[in-house]
Image (cartoon, rainbow, N blue to C red; front, side, top):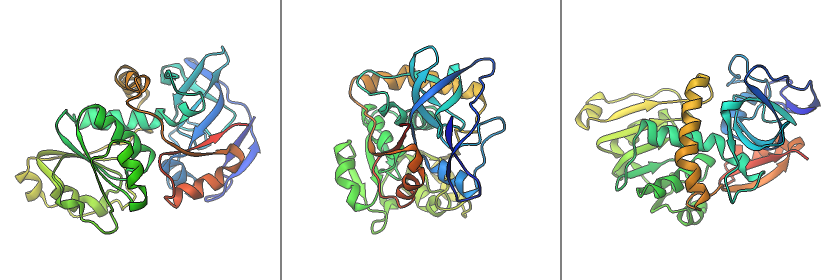
Length: 304
């Protein structure tokens, strides 16, 4: 098969590689499409190696057809940038009604990330307010729609050029992070992709009993935390990752996503937001687009 290799940090190569061999409990998926995630860019740069036992190729999600002929999408620990990938059967999801096979590649990683953090960790409820950073990203566009489906108020940060698209997805208020101070809002939940550079302002933005969930470190790993401010608000700060979780924890998340999110997608309350698609061999061009933050939603790679 052909796949995208990383011959040296920062480089991508479309090359012939051995076919994966499924182990016990795994199935072979012939990939139709995969999606670009920030973690893929970090892996290519040499900063985010795959977990032990995972394929060396990037790609945290895919859609395709199993060797038994079943159309599926899947959450992956790696290997999606390839024509074939071996997947634990428990990490497969059916294609939601109303979504094409290729479009479904945009769903598994964001759905599992958003549900596990917004529901499992933060416990967002109807009537509460959530502040979503990076509203134009794949995570952001999905989280906006999910929060609105939960009947929450949604505030999001993004470049001004993306605000119209985010309002169409349901955002109640959009802030331009380059010119506006988001710390003045009052949120029950903050979903943060930035980390260190946003920590102080995120704490200021929390209401009493607020919950800050950090899922990315685009703004750095370290910051000073005023514990007095945290205690005064009886607030919670949590940090999570998805890729390195044990398979049993991923199983639980995938079951929750299928139970609670798939019906919302099939009812039209959430849709995959896809900026554009590239052939797999043009993965480097897709990475440049994501790195430039010039997209809204997901960027797909199709196997043609």
